[in-house]
Image (cartoon, rainbow, N blue to C red; front, top):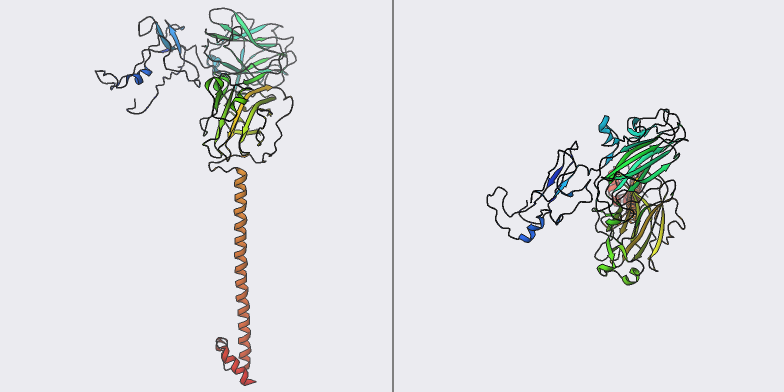
Length: 553
Protein backbone atom coordinates (compact mmCIF):
# COMPACT_ATOMS: atom_id res chain seq x y z
CA UNK A 1 0.00 0.00 0.00
CA UNK A 2 1.17 3.58 -0.60
CA UNK A 3 2.69 5.30 2.41
CA UNK A 4 1.15 8.69 1.64
CA UNK A 5 -1.82 10.02 -0.28
CA UNK A 6 -5.32 8.70 -0.95
CA UNK A 7 -5.96 5.33 -2.51
CA UNK A 8 -8.75 2.89 -3.36
CA UNK A 9 -8.91 -0.88 -2.97
CA UNK A 10 -10.17 -2.77 -6.03
CA UNK A 11 -10.83 -6.51 -5.88
CA UNK A 12 -10.82 -8.04 -9.35
CA UNK A 13 -11.76 -11.65 -10.10
CA UNK A 14 -11.33 -13.39 -13.47
CA UNK A 15 -13.17 -16.45 -14.66
CA UNK A 16 -11.10 -19.52 -15.42
CA UNK A 17 -11.59 -22.13 -18.11
CA UNK A 18 -14.30 -24.17 -16.38
CA UNK A 19 -17.29 -24.00 -14.05
CA UNK A 20 -15.44 -25.17 -10.93
CA UNK A 21 -13.93 -21.84 -10.03
CA UNK A 22 -15.97 -19.86 -7.48
CA UNK A 23 -13.96 -17.19 -5.64
CA UNK A 24 -14.94 -15.63 -2.30
CA UNK A 25 -13.65 -12.86 -0.03
CA UNK A 26 -14.57 -11.91 3.54
CA UNK A 27 -13.40 -9.84 6.54
CA UNK A 28 -11.48 -7.13 4.68
CA UNK A 29 -9.37 -5.00 7.07
CA UNK A 30 -6.63 -2.39 6.63
CA UNK A 31 -3.96 -1.88 9.36
CA UNK A 32 -1.43 0.88 9.86
CA UNK A 33 1.50 -1.54 10.00
CA UNK A 34 3.76 -3.55 7.66
CA UNK A 35 2.29 -6.85 6.53
CA UNK A 36 5.35 -8.70 7.97
CA UNK A 37 4.92 -7.18 11.43
CA UNK A 38 3.98 -9.55 14.23
CA UNK A 39 2.34 -6.76 16.18
CA UNK A 40 -0.54 -4.81 14.66
CA UNK A 41 -0.60 -1.26 15.97
CA UNK A 42 -3.75 0.89 16.12
CA UNK A 43 -4.24 3.03 13.04
CA UNK A 44 -3.23 6.68 13.13
CA UNK A 45 -6.59 7.72 11.73
CA UNK A 46 -8.97 4.79 12.23
CA UNK A 47 -11.98 6.51 10.68
CA UNK A 48 -10.25 6.75 7.31
CA UNK A 49 -8.75 3.26 7.23
CA UNK A 50 -11.96 1.69 8.48
CA UNK A 51 -13.74 2.83 5.33
CA UNK A 52 -12.11 -0.17 3.65
CA UNK A 53 -13.01 -2.62 6.44
CA UNK A 54 -15.95 -4.93 5.79
CA UNK A 55 -17.25 -8.31 6.97
CA UNK A 56 -20.25 -8.15 4.60
CA UNK A 57 -22.76 -8.96 7.36
CA UNK A 58 -24.89 -5.85 6.73
CA UNK A 59 -24.19 -5.30 3.04
CA UNK A 60 -21.09 -4.45 1.03
CA UNK A 61 -20.09 -1.46 3.24
CA UNK A 62 -18.34 1.29 1.24
CA UNK A 63 -17.59 -0.92 -1.74
CA UNK A 64 -19.39 -0.38 -5.07
CA UNK A 65 -19.77 -2.53 -8.15
CA UNK A 66 -17.91 -1.15 -11.18
CA UNK A 67 -20.46 -0.72 -13.98
CA UNK A 68 -17.81 -1.39 -16.63
CA UNK A 69 -17.13 -4.89 -15.26
CA UNK A 70 -18.05 -7.96 -17.28
CA UNK A 71 -20.00 -9.37 -14.32
CA UNK A 72 -20.62 -8.59 -10.65
CA UNK A 73 -19.81 -9.73 -7.14
CA UNK A 74 -22.71 -11.27 -5.27
CA UNK A 75 -23.33 -11.26 -1.51
CA UNK A 76 -24.13 -14.81 -0.51
CA UNK A 77 -25.04 -16.94 2.51
CA UNK A 78 -23.97 -20.56 2.83
CA UNK A 79 -22.59 -22.66 -0.05
CA UNK A 80 -22.43 -21.44 -3.64
CA UNK A 81 -24.89 -22.82 -6.24
CA UNK A 82 -22.19 -24.92 -7.96
CA UNK A 83 -21.02 -28.30 -6.62
CA UNK A 84 -17.39 -28.89 -5.60
CA UNK A 85 -16.39 -25.22 -5.65
CA UNK A 86 -16.68 -22.20 -3.38
CA UNK A 87 -17.00 -22.07 0.44
CA UNK A 88 -19.79 -23.70 2.48
CA UNK A 89 -19.79 -20.93 5.11
CA UNK A 90 -18.37 -17.48 5.76
CA UNK A 91 -15.15 -16.62 7.57
CA UNK A 92 -16.51 -14.21 10.18
CA UNK A 93 -18.88 -16.54 12.05
CA UNK A 94 -18.61 -19.75 10.12
CA UNK A 95 -22.26 -19.71 9.11
CA UNK A 96 -23.29 -16.24 7.89
CA UNK A 97 -22.90 -13.97 4.90
CA UNK A 98 -19.97 -13.92 2.53
CA UNK A 99 -19.44 -11.98 -0.69
CA UNK A 100 -18.42 -14.21 -3.56
CA UNK A 101 -18.12 -14.65 -7.29
CA UNK A 102 -20.21 -17.54 -8.64
CA UNK A 103 -19.27 -18.68 -12.12
CA UNK A 104 -22.98 -18.61 -13.04
CA UNK A 105 -22.60 -14.83 -13.14
CA UNK A 106 -20.70 -14.97 -16.41
CA UNK A 107 -20.35 -12.26 -19.01
CA UNK A 108 -22.20 -13.94 -21.86
CA UNK A 109 -20.24 -13.28 -25.03
CA UNK A 110 -20.66 -16.10 -27.51
CA UNK A 111 -19.66 -16.05 -31.18
CA UNK A 112 -19.82 -19.88 -31.53
CA UNK A 113 -16.20 -20.08 -32.67
CA UNK A 114 -13.91 -22.87 -31.50
CA UNK A 115 -14.16 -26.62 -31.44
CA UNK A 116 -16.95 -28.95 -30.31
CA UNK A 117 -18.45 -28.05 -26.91
CA UNK A 118 -16.15 -25.05 -26.45
CA UNK A 119 -17.88 -23.26 -29.33
CA UNK A 120 -21.29 -23.56 -27.61
CA UNK A 121 -20.14 -21.18 -24.80
CA UNK A 122 -22.00 -23.12 -22.14
CA UNK A 123 -25.27 -23.34 -24.09
CA UNK A 124 -26.88 -26.78 -23.98
CA UNK A 125 -29.48 -28.56 -26.10
CA UNK A 126 -32.87 -28.93 -24.45
CA UNK A 127 -34.15 -32.46 -23.85
CA UNK A 128 -37.81 -31.46 -24.03
CA UNK A 129 -37.87 -30.33 -27.70
CA UNK A 130 -38.22 -32.12 -31.08
CA UNK A 131 -34.70 -31.72 -32.53
CA UNK A 132 -31.41 -29.85 -31.96
CA UNK A 133 -29.74 -26.65 -33.10
CA UNK A 134 -26.58 -27.20 -35.19
CA UNK A 135 -23.25 -25.41 -35.61
CA UNK A 136 -22.56 -24.38 -39.20
CA UNK A 137 -20.00 -22.71 -41.45
CA UNK A 138 -20.89 -21.12 -44.79
CA UNK A 139 -24.25 -21.77 -46.42
CA UNK A 140 -26.88 -24.23 -45.21
CA UNK A 141 -27.80 -27.32 -47.23
CA UNK A 142 -30.93 -25.78 -48.81
CA UNK A 143 -30.78 -23.19 -51.61
CA UNK A 144 -32.83 -20.04 -51.04
CA UNK A 145 -32.68 -20.06 -47.25
CA UNK A 146 -30.21 -19.53 -44.44
CA UNK A 147 -27.10 -17.31 -44.34
CA UNK A 148 -24.13 -17.68 -46.68
CA UNK A 149 -21.65 -16.59 -43.97
CA UNK A 150 -21.53 -16.06 -40.23
CA UNK A 151 -21.97 -12.63 -38.64
CA UNK A 152 -18.74 -12.53 -36.60
CA UNK A 153 -16.29 -12.67 -39.51
CA UNK A 154 -18.66 -12.41 -42.47
CA UNK A 155 -17.04 -15.35 -44.24
CA UNK A 156 -17.32 -19.11 -44.61
CA UNK A 157 -14.76 -19.81 -41.87
CA UNK A 158 -16.85 -18.38 -39.04
CA UNK A 159 -19.50 -20.45 -37.25
CA UNK A 160 -23.10 -19.77 -36.28
CA UNK A 161 -25.93 -21.76 -34.68
CA UNK A 162 -28.98 -22.64 -36.77
CA UNK A 163 -32.06 -24.86 -37.19
CA UNK A 164 -32.40 -26.85 -40.41
CA UNK A 165 -35.94 -26.84 -41.82
CA UNK A 166 -35.48 -29.61 -44.41
CA UNK A 167 -36.80 -33.18 -44.10
CA UNK A 168 -37.38 -34.92 -41.76
CA UNK A 169 -38.62 -31.72 -40.05
CA UNK A 170 -42.36 -31.04 -39.90
CA UNK A 171 -44.29 -27.77 -39.38
CA UNK A 172 -44.37 -26.50 -35.77
CA UNK A 173 -41.54 -28.76 -34.61
CA UNK A 174 -39.32 -26.93 -32.12
CA UNK A 175 -35.62 -26.84 -31.23
CA UNK A 176 -34.40 -25.17 -28.03
CA UNK A 177 -30.94 -24.21 -26.80
CA UNK A 178 -30.50 -23.15 -23.15
CA UNK A 179 -27.95 -20.68 -21.74
CA UNK A 180 -25.97 -21.16 -18.52
CA UNK A 181 -27.42 -19.64 -15.35
CA UNK A 182 -26.92 -15.87 -15.36
CA UNK A 183 -26.64 -13.70 -12.26
CA UNK A 184 -29.10 -10.81 -12.12
CA UNK A 185 -28.12 -7.33 -10.87
CA UNK A 186 -29.59 -4.18 -9.35
CA UNK A 187 -29.46 -2.46 -12.74
CA UNK A 188 -30.58 -3.44 -16.23
CA UNK A 189 -28.87 -6.25 -18.10
CA UNK A 190 -29.19 -5.91 -21.87
CA UNK A 191 -29.09 -8.98 -24.11
CA UNK A 192 -27.92 -8.52 -27.69
CA UNK A 193 -27.83 -11.07 -30.45
CA UNK A 194 -27.88 -11.29 -34.25
CA UNK A 195 -30.38 -13.41 -36.17
CA UNK A 196 -30.89 -14.45 -39.80
CA UNK A 197 -34.32 -15.51 -41.12
CA UNK A 198 -34.39 -15.89 -44.91
CA UNK A 199 -36.85 -18.03 -46.87
CA UNK A 200 -40.51 -18.15 -47.85
CA UNK A 201 -41.24 -20.90 -45.28
CA UNK A 202 -39.49 -19.35 -42.26
CA UNK A 203 -41.31 -20.08 -38.99
CA UNK A 204 -40.56 -18.35 -35.67
CA UNK A 205 -37.61 -17.42 -33.49
CA UNK A 206 -38.63 -17.00 -29.83
CA UNK A 207 -36.61 -16.01 -26.75
CA UNK A 208 -37.74 -17.16 -23.30
CA UNK A 209 -36.57 -16.36 -19.77
CA UNK A 210 -36.60 -19.00 -17.07
CA UNK A 211 -36.06 -18.10 -13.41
CA UNK A 212 -33.98 -20.52 -11.39
CA UNK A 213 -36.08 -22.86 -9.27
CA UNK A 214 -39.42 -22.03 -10.95
CA UNK A 215 -39.45 -24.44 -13.89
CA UNK A 216 -41.62 -22.01 -15.90
CA UNK A 217 -40.58 -19.84 -18.84
CA UNK A 218 -41.77 -16.39 -19.95
CA UNK A 219 -41.64 -15.25 -23.58
CA UNK A 220 -39.56 -12.06 -23.92
CA UNK A 221 -39.25 -11.65 -27.68
CA UNK A 222 -40.48 -13.17 -30.96
CA UNK A 223 -39.89 -12.70 -34.70
CA UNK A 224 -41.55 -14.68 -37.48
CA UNK A 225 -41.51 -14.87 -41.28
CA UNK A 226 -38.98 -13.98 -43.94
CA UNK A 227 -36.73 -11.08 -42.86
CA UNK A 228 -34.52 -11.03 -45.95
CA UNK A 229 -30.96 -12.12 -46.62
CA UNK A 230 -29.31 -10.15 -43.82
CA UNK A 231 -28.13 -10.43 -40.24
CA UNK A 232 -30.27 -8.29 -37.92
CA UNK A 233 -29.39 -7.24 -34.36
CA UNK A 234 -31.93 -7.60 -31.55
CA UNK A 235 -31.62 -6.34 -27.98
CA UNK A 236 -33.81 -6.40 -24.91
CA UNK A 237 -33.59 -6.10 -21.10
CA UNK A 238 -33.80 -9.47 -19.37
CA UNK A 239 -33.85 -8.83 -15.60
CA UNK A 240 -36.78 -6.44 -15.15
CA UNK A 241 -40.01 -7.67 -13.59
CA UNK A 242 -42.79 -6.35 -15.83
CA UNK A 243 -45.42 -6.59 -13.09
CA UNK A 244 -43.56 -4.73 -10.31
CA UNK A 245 -40.99 -2.77 -12.40
CA UNK A 246 -38.28 -4.11 -10.07
CA UNK A 247 -35.12 -6.04 -10.82
CA UNK A 248 -35.24 -9.81 -10.65
CA UNK A 249 -33.10 -11.21 -7.81
CA UNK A 250 -32.87 -14.87 -8.78
CA UNK A 251 -30.62 -16.59 -11.31
CA UNK A 252 -31.81 -16.45 -14.93
CA UNK A 253 -31.61 -18.82 -17.90
CA UNK A 254 -32.29 -17.77 -21.50
CA UNK A 255 -33.82 -20.13 -24.05
CA UNK A 256 -33.70 -19.66 -27.83
CA UNK A 257 -36.45 -21.58 -29.62
CA UNK A 258 -36.63 -22.12 -33.38
CA UNK A 259 -40.02 -23.18 -34.78
CA UNK A 260 -40.32 -24.84 -38.19
CA UNK A 261 -42.62 -23.18 -40.75
CA UNK A 262 -44.65 -24.64 -43.62
CA UNK A 263 -41.80 -25.87 -45.79
CA UNK A 264 -38.09 -26.59 -46.18
CA UNK A 265 -37.13 -22.98 -47.05
CA UNK A 266 -37.14 -21.91 -43.44
CA UNK A 267 -33.64 -22.13 -41.90
CA UNK A 268 -33.11 -19.83 -38.86
CA UNK A 269 -29.68 -18.80 -37.51
CA UNK A 270 -28.31 -16.88 -34.52
CA UNK A 271 -24.81 -15.54 -33.78
CA UNK A 272 -22.80 -13.19 -31.50
CA UNK A 273 -24.87 -13.37 -28.30
CA UNK A 274 -23.80 -10.82 -25.69
CA UNK A 275 -25.05 -9.84 -22.24
CA UNK A 276 -24.02 -6.32 -21.21
CA UNK A 277 -24.66 -4.15 -18.17
CA UNK A 278 -26.47 -1.07 -19.39
CA UNK A 279 -29.86 0.42 -20.14
CA UNK A 280 -31.70 -0.69 -23.30
CA UNK A 281 -35.18 -1.06 -24.76
CA UNK A 282 -36.57 -4.07 -26.57
CA UNK A 283 -35.82 -4.04 -30.28
CA UNK A 284 -38.46 -4.12 -32.95
CA UNK A 285 -40.57 -7.15 -33.75
CA UNK A 286 -43.04 -7.80 -36.52
CA UNK A 287 -45.94 -6.76 -34.29
CA UNK A 288 -44.17 -3.58 -33.16
CA UNK A 289 -42.15 -2.10 -36.07
CA UNK A 290 -41.42 1.21 -34.28
CA UNK A 291 -39.43 0.72 -31.12
CA UNK A 292 -37.82 3.13 -28.68
CA UNK A 293 -34.11 2.32 -28.45
CA UNK A 294 -33.28 5.04 -25.94
CA UNK A 295 -35.44 7.36 -23.85
CA UNK A 296 -33.72 9.64 -21.33
CA UNK A 297 -35.36 12.46 -19.35
CA UNK A 298 -32.50 12.55 -16.78
CA UNK A 299 -34.97 12.20 -13.91
CA UNK A 300 -33.02 9.27 -12.47
CA UNK A 301 -29.58 10.56 -13.41
CA UNK A 302 -27.16 10.58 -16.32
CA UNK A 303 -25.64 7.09 -16.22
CA UNK A 304 -28.89 5.51 -15.00
CA UNK A 305 -30.71 6.38 -18.21
CA UNK A 306 -28.08 5.21 -20.62
CA UNK A 307 -25.34 7.87 -20.94
CA UNK A 308 -21.66 7.95 -19.97
CA UNK A 309 -19.19 10.81 -19.54
CA UNK A 310 -16.10 11.00 -21.75
CA UNK A 311 -13.01 10.86 -19.52
CA UNK A 312 -10.78 12.39 -22.22
CA UNK A 313 -12.57 15.74 -22.52
CA UNK A 314 -12.04 18.92 -20.50
CA UNK A 315 -15.32 19.17 -18.59
CA UNK A 316 -18.33 17.00 -17.77
CA UNK A 317 -22.03 17.42 -18.22
CA UNK A 318 -23.80 18.07 -14.93
CA UNK A 319 -27.23 16.97 -13.77
CA UNK A 320 -29.74 19.63 -12.77
CA UNK A 321 -32.33 18.32 -10.34
CA UNK A 322 -34.80 20.61 -8.62
CA UNK A 323 -34.54 18.54 -5.42
CA UNK A 324 -30.76 19.11 -5.19
CA UNK A 325 -30.77 22.91 -5.21
CA UNK A 326 -30.48 25.52 -7.94
CA UNK A 327 -27.48 25.31 -10.29
CA UNK A 328 -25.56 28.41 -11.31
CA UNK A 329 -27.38 29.09 -14.59
CA UNK A 330 -29.61 32.03 -15.55
CA UNK A 331 -33.41 31.70 -15.57
CA UNK A 332 -33.22 28.33 -13.83
CA UNK A 333 -36.62 28.63 -12.19
CA UNK A 334 -38.23 29.34 -15.56
CA UNK A 335 -36.65 26.47 -17.50
CA UNK A 336 -36.95 23.97 -14.64
CA UNK A 337 -40.69 24.60 -14.51
CA UNK A 338 -40.95 22.71 -17.81
CA UNK A 339 -38.03 20.26 -17.39
CA UNK A 340 -37.33 19.28 -13.78
CA UNK A 341 -34.09 17.40 -14.47
CA UNK A 342 -31.71 17.92 -17.38
CA UNK A 343 -28.02 17.73 -18.31
CA UNK A 344 -26.09 20.96 -18.78
CA UNK A 345 -22.67 22.63 -19.06
CA UNK A 346 -21.79 26.22 -18.14
CA UNK A 347 -19.20 28.48 -19.81
CA UNK A 348 -17.94 30.21 -16.64
CA UNK A 349 -14.19 29.82 -16.19
CA UNK A 350 -13.74 28.00 -19.50
CA UNK A 351 -11.77 28.88 -22.62
CA UNK A 352 -12.89 28.72 -26.22
CA UNK A 353 -12.78 25.20 -27.59
CA UNK A 354 -13.21 23.35 -24.27
CA UNK A 355 -15.46 20.33 -24.80
CA UNK A 356 -17.87 18.17 -22.84
CA UNK A 357 -18.87 14.84 -24.41
CA UNK A 358 -21.86 12.72 -23.43
CA UNK A 359 -22.28 9.39 -25.22
CA UNK A 360 -24.91 6.69 -25.15
CA UNK A 361 -23.52 3.68 -23.34
CA UNK A 362 -25.65 1.27 -25.37
CA UNK A 363 -25.48 0.25 -29.00
CA UNK A 364 -28.11 2.18 -30.93
CA UNK A 365 -27.63 0.79 -34.44
CA UNK A 366 -29.23 -2.30 -35.93
CA UNK A 367 -28.90 -1.53 -39.62
CA UNK A 368 -32.33 0.12 -39.89
CA UNK A 369 -33.54 3.70 -40.11
CA UNK A 370 -33.60 5.56 -36.79
CA UNK A 371 -34.59 9.02 -35.62
CA UNK A 372 -32.91 11.06 -32.86
CA UNK A 373 -34.99 13.73 -31.10
CA UNK A 374 -34.15 15.92 -28.09
CA UNK A 375 -34.74 19.30 -26.45
CA UNK A 376 -32.01 21.85 -25.87
CA UNK A 377 -31.22 25.40 -24.70
CA UNK A 378 -28.23 27.50 -25.86
CA UNK A 379 -27.53 30.77 -24.06
CA UNK A 380 -24.35 32.73 -24.85
CA UNK A 381 -22.36 33.73 -27.95
CA UNK A 382 -22.96 32.11 -31.33
CA UNK A 383 -19.59 30.33 -31.22
CA UNK A 384 -21.00 27.85 -28.70
CA UNK A 385 -21.66 24.52 -30.38
CA UNK A 386 -23.86 21.51 -29.70
CA UNK A 387 -22.74 18.83 -32.13
CA UNK A 388 -24.07 15.30 -32.58
CA UNK A 389 -21.73 12.50 -33.65
CA UNK A 390 -21.97 8.80 -34.28
CA UNK A 391 -19.21 6.53 -32.99
CA UNK A 392 -18.23 3.19 -34.44
CA UNK A 393 -16.89 0.28 -32.43
CA UNK A 394 -13.41 1.86 -32.46
CA UNK A 395 -14.85 5.20 -31.24
CA UNK A 396 -14.13 6.92 -34.58
CA UNK A 397 -16.27 10.06 -34.90
CA UNK A 398 -18.68 10.92 -37.70
CA UNK A 399 -20.55 14.23 -37.61
CA UNK A 400 -24.33 13.81 -37.87
CA UNK A 401 -25.31 17.45 -37.42
CA UNK A 402 -25.14 20.65 -35.40
CA UNK A 403 -27.99 22.56 -33.78
CA UNK A 404 -28.42 26.24 -34.78
CA UNK A 405 -25.63 28.58 -33.73
CA UNK A 406 -28.16 31.19 -32.58
CA UNK A 407 -29.40 31.48 -28.99
CA UNK A 408 -32.69 29.87 -28.00
CA UNK A 409 -34.79 32.94 -27.22
CA UNK A 410 -37.93 31.15 -26.06
CA UNK A 411 -36.62 28.50 -23.68
CA UNK A 412 -36.51 24.87 -24.74
CA UNK A 413 -36.30 24.08 -28.47
CA UNK A 414 -37.01 20.70 -30.08
CA UNK A 415 -34.72 19.09 -32.62
CA UNK A 416 -34.70 15.95 -34.78
CA UNK A 417 -31.94 14.29 -36.75
CA UNK A 418 -32.17 11.36 -39.13
CA UNK A 419 -29.50 8.86 -38.07
CA UNK A 420 -27.47 7.11 -40.78
CA UNK A 421 -28.34 3.52 -41.62
CA UNK A 422 -25.01 2.07 -40.60
CA UNK A 423 -24.50 -1.25 -38.88
CA UNK A 424 -21.01 -0.13 -37.89
CA UNK A 425 -22.36 2.73 -35.79
CA UNK A 426 -22.14 1.87 -32.12
CA UNK A 427 -23.07 5.00 -30.13
CA UNK A 428 -24.43 8.54 -30.34
CA UNK A 429 -22.44 11.36 -28.73
CA UNK A 430 -23.45 14.92 -27.81
CA UNK A 431 -20.54 17.38 -27.85
CA UNK A 432 -20.85 20.76 -26.14
CA UNK A 433 -18.16 23.26 -27.18
CA UNK A 434 -17.39 26.48 -25.30
CA UNK A 435 -17.50 29.73 -27.33
CA UNK A 436 -15.59 33.02 -26.94
CA UNK A 437 -17.53 34.29 -23.93
CA UNK A 438 -17.55 32.90 -20.41
CA UNK A 439 -21.23 33.63 -19.91
CA UNK A 440 -23.97 31.21 -20.86
CA UNK A 441 -24.78 27.50 -20.84
CA UNK A 442 -26.05 24.59 -22.93
CA UNK A 443 -28.80 22.31 -21.61
CA UNK A 444 -30.02 18.94 -22.94
CA UNK A 445 -33.13 16.90 -22.14
CA UNK A 446 -35.66 14.31 -23.37
CA UNK A 447 -33.29 12.38 -25.63
CA UNK A 448 -35.15 9.72 -27.62
CA UNK A 449 -33.98 7.34 -30.34
CA UNK A 450 -36.74 5.51 -32.21
CA UNK A 451 -36.64 3.06 -35.10
CA UNK A 452 -38.27 4.23 -38.30
CA UNK A 453 -38.29 7.60 -40.05
CA UNK A 454 -38.52 10.95 -38.28
CA UNK A 455 -41.96 12.56 -38.18
CA UNK A 456 -42.09 16.32 -38.60
CA UNK A 457 -39.26 18.70 -39.32
CA UNK A 458 -35.80 17.19 -39.69
CA UNK A 459 -33.06 19.34 -38.06
CA UNK A 460 -33.83 22.99 -37.33
CA UNK A 461 -33.10 26.06 -39.48
CA UNK A 462 -29.61 27.41 -38.92
CA UNK A 463 -29.15 31.16 -39.32
CA UNK A 464 -25.40 30.62 -39.26
CA UNK A 465 -24.90 27.65 -41.63
CA UNK A 466 -22.46 24.98 -40.58
CA UNK A 467 -19.35 25.15 -42.80
CA UNK A 468 -18.87 22.24 -45.17
CA UNK A 469 -15.66 21.43 -43.33
CA UNK A 470 -16.30 19.83 -39.97
CA UNK A 471 -15.61 22.48 -37.34
CA UNK A 472 -13.33 21.10 -34.65
CA UNK A 473 -11.78 23.26 -31.93
CA UNK A 474 -8.11 22.73 -31.21
CA UNK A 475 -6.10 23.27 -28.09
CA UNK A 476 -5.38 26.87 -29.14
CA UNK A 477 -9.08 27.71 -29.33
CA UNK A 478 -9.12 28.15 -33.12
CA UNK A 479 -11.48 26.14 -35.29
CA UNK A 480 -10.63 24.71 -38.68
CA UNK A 481 -12.15 27.59 -40.67
CA UNK A 482 -10.17 30.20 -38.72
CA UNK A 483 -6.97 28.23 -39.17
CA UNK A 484 -7.59 27.91 -42.93
CA UNK A 485 -8.15 31.67 -43.23
CA UNK A 486 -4.95 32.46 -41.33
CA UNK A 487 -2.98 29.97 -43.41
CA UNK A 488 -4.32 31.44 -46.65
CA UNK A 489 -3.41 34.96 -45.52
CA UNK A 490 0.14 33.92 -44.57
CA UNK A 491 0.62 32.14 -47.91
CA UNK A 492 -0.66 35.20 -49.80
CA UNK A 493 1.74 37.52 -47.96
CA UNK A 494 4.62 35.16 -48.67
CA UNK A 495 3.75 35.16 -52.38
CA UNK A 496 3.63 38.97 -52.41
CA UNK A 497 7.03 39.23 -50.71
CA UNK A 498 8.59 36.67 -53.03
CA UNK A 499 7.12 38.40 -56.08
CA UNK A 500 8.44 41.76 -54.84
CA UNK A 501 11.89 40.28 -54.32
CA UNK A 502 11.90 38.81 -57.82
CA UNK A 503 10.88 42.13 -59.37
CA UNK A 504 13.53 44.05 -57.40
CA UNK A 505 16.23 41.58 -58.43
CA UNK A 506 15.13 41.76 -62.06
CA UNK A 507 15.21 45.57 -61.96
CA UNK A 508 18.75 45.62 -60.55
CA UNK A 509 19.88 43.09 -63.16
CA UNK A 510 18.33 45.08 -66.00
CA UNK A 511 19.95 48.30 -64.75
CA UNK A 512 23.37 46.69 -64.58
CA UNK A 513 23.01 45.29 -68.10
CA UNK A 514 22.03 48.70 -69.46
CA UNK A 515 24.94 50.38 -67.68
CA UNK A 516 27.36 47.81 -69.05
CA UNK A 517 26.04 48.22 -72.59
CA UNK A 518 26.31 52.00 -72.25
CA UNK A 519 29.87 51.73 -70.95
CA UNK A 520 30.91 49.39 -73.72
CA UNK A 521 29.43 51.75 -76.32
CA UNK A 522 31.38 54.68 -74.83
CA UNK A 523 34.61 52.68 -74.85
CA UNK A 524 34.14 51.71 -78.49
CA UNK A 525 33.52 55.33 -79.48
CA UNK A 526 36.63 56.70 -77.77
CA UNK A 527 38.76 53.95 -79.20
CA UNK A 528 37.64 54.90 -82.66
CA UNK A 529 38.60 58.59 -82.03
CA UNK A 530 41.99 57.91 -80.40
CA UNK A 531 43.48 54.47 -80.89
CA UNK A 532 46.35 55.37 -78.58
CA UNK A 533 44.09 55.56 -75.56
CA UNK A 534 43.02 52.26 -74.15
CA UNK A 535 39.33 51.68 -73.71
CA UNK A 536 39.82 51.06 -69.98
CA UNK A 537 41.39 54.50 -69.49
CA UNK A 538 38.69 56.13 -71.53
CA UNK A 539 35.93 54.56 -69.59
CA UNK A 540 37.48 55.25 -66.19
CA UNK A 541 38.33 58.91 -66.99
CA UNK A 542 35.32 60.68 -68.50
CA UNK A 543 37.01 64.15 -68.13
CA UNK A 544 39.82 63.07 -70.38
CA UNK A 545 37.29 61.74 -72.85
CA UNK A 546 35.53 65.06 -72.99
CA UNK A 547 38.80 66.96 -73.39
CA UNK A 548 39.95 64.72 -76.21
CA UNK A 549 36.65 65.15 -77.94
CA UNK A 550 36.95 68.93 -77.66
CA UNK A 551 40.53 68.97 -79.07
CA UNK A 552 39.47 66.79 -81.96
CA UNK A 553 36.69 69.11 -82.77
